[in-house]
Length: 169
Image (cartoon, rainbow, N blue to C red; front, side, top):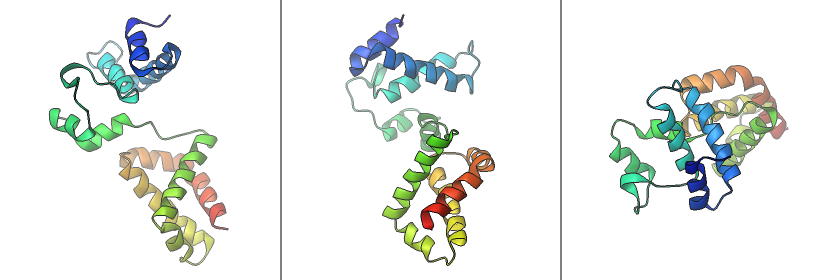
């Protein structure tokens, strides 16, 4: 049975309590990676993740449109990049999600004409290597740390390279 906070958020977002409860459980998993469950920041972090996903505004900021910039200025201890990195989802690990992310990168690369730059590199192999480097920049721009990117690349660079290579041939 959903708790009172989940019910309240469901009502405020127009989503089902089950949907909010799923967000809540995912947020708990993310919070466990950063804080002990009995620690003072765990539940605040869980609640914050769910509020951001549901675009909910509570407390002092209620009644005012909340933007990333205003949140940073109100909480000077947290930089904009830290805020983005905590608000975003972790890098994907299963094949389908990895391919979806790579397709988003390719769509952005085409919009930025990087795809044409890649094709000018000569061989599809060189083009895929060029795009793999641009993928790292793209992930960094989305708030992922160098360590997160390196760890992800260690596990997925070959698959990413193959995906990018196939898109060029």
